[in-house]
Length: 161
Image (cartoon, rainbow, N blue to C red; front, side, top):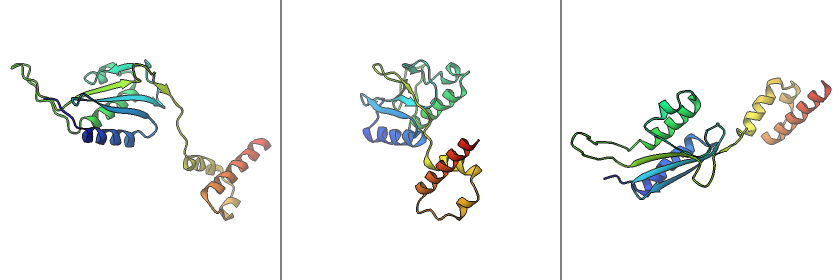
């Protein structure tokens, strides 16, 4: 009989959020017999804005969209760590750990495409590619101060050009 606990659902939730920090998810139980993962927002384009993803046909339905296919397969892989299916159609025997559901958006809320978040470290790395030699000699009290100095330097370089 399909059954999943709150603790198992919480583990799935944490692993999905750790694997995809730039996405917003809703991970919930469905009557203690299934796990529902709703992708609410993120930086990749998913069409349509509200849909159930068939977990058995991900590769066929998303064969033209490698990014979405890999994304959904990774979610399914995380959901399936403690999953099994020992069903036998010949003897009409059904035995699965729990049911797995993946949704794009929710029934009352569409999926939202967001921009990728740029962290301060990534921005600093981008800015330092053309960093002037003098900045290496400056003593900054924090990374934020150096980042502000780099932004100002880049602004001046663009204004001069």
